[in-house]
Image 1: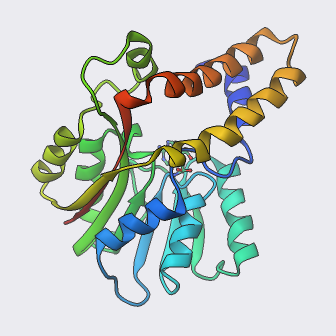
Image 2: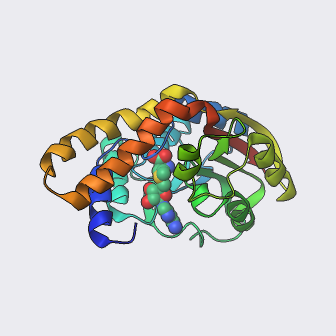
Length: 249
Ligand SMILES: C[S@@+](CC[C@H](N)C(=O)[O-])C[C@H]1O[C@@H](n2cnc3c(N)ncnc32)[C@H](O)[C@@H]1O
C-alpha cells in the first residue's frame, strides 16, 4: 500500500479493534506455560504489540513482570496506555514506540520476548537472529508465525500471502529455530476461534465503513482487499495457519 490515502483508510479500518491478528487469552496462556517459569519481576518485551491484547493477557498471567510493549504505530500505543491505566498496571507495563529491527533494550537484558503476529515483518530467521543478543542466558522467545499446513494452496491464497515469500510449513519453522541456536520448547497451531476473534470485529468494521464510503473508489478498494482476506480464510483456511513457537536461547 503506497498511496497515503489508502494507508489512512487502512488505519481507519484497524483503529480501535481489540486485536490486530489471530490470537486469544487461552493460546497466550498455553504458550506461556510451555515457556516455563520466570523470576519475580521478569523483564518482558512484547514486540509488535498492536492494541495490546496479548500485552494485557501477559500482565494478568505474570502479575509482577515488567513489560515493555513495542510498536511503531503511535495510535496502537495510545490504546495500550489506556488499557494499562484502566487495569491499574501502568507502573509496570509501558508502551514504547520503536522498531522491531532495532530493539530498544540493552544486550542480555530480557527474560522473555513475546511476538504475536508480527515477526513475519522481519522474517522468522532475521527476527530470531536479531533478537537473540537481547535475551539473558536461558531467556525465551514465544512468537506466532504464519505457516502452510497443506501443499498446493489455491492461487488466491498464494497471492494473499505473496508479501511473505519465505513462509514455511511447521517443520521448516522448527528447523529455523534450531539453526538459529535455540531449543524448541513446544509449538501448536492456533485454533479457528483465534482467527474469528480477529476477523469478526474486523468484518463488522468493514461493513460500517462500506456505508460511509459508498461513493469513494479508493476507500472501497481498500475495504474490498481487507474483506478478501477474511473470505479467503473462510474458503481456504485448511491450507494455512499460525504456529505458536516457544523456544529458549
Ligand atoms: C499483525 S499486527 C499484530 C499486533 C498484535 N500483536 C496482535 O496480535 O494484536 C503487527 C503489528 O506490528 C506492528 N509493526 C509493524 N512494523 C513494525 C516495526 N518495524 N516495528 C515495530 N512494530 C511494527 C504494527 O503496527 C502492528 O501493530
